[in-house]
Image (cartoon, rainbow, N blue to C red):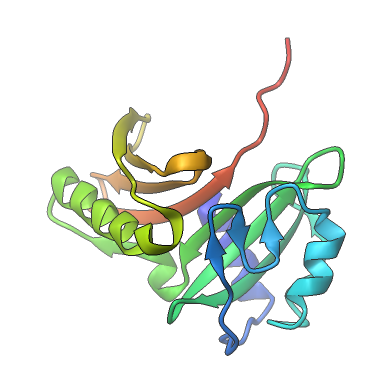
Length: 176
């Protein structure tokens, strides 16, 4: 999904943002969990008028995507709305290099994710816990902040790469 975000923003020809957006436990800039997506899109226009359009996402939810400057770093940010048209999930990756780096091993990726989570702690609170999710092609190191905000460092051994994702909320599980 992070790759789709980068491609979407690159195709839109996003210019580097100049105004700083706030990073909080509820979201990034005007993209806050629970806010109507249309309101967030309007408010996001001050950062980049061309990028804050609502459209269908790769998972069929309405979404907006924009590059925002946060604490001196550009983040590619995507917010998705649920059936009630309110933001239920926000994903952000460092825009530089799509957030991916080449590292020696999984432990280096975990340390990279821990350092990134620590850099966000002044705005999000301490990331006291971390866990590992085993996926078919990756190991995901998840650093959980209070309130459900997570940094995910994904290690892909085949390419020896590690990417970072900041995630708020999530898509609700389908009911049986």
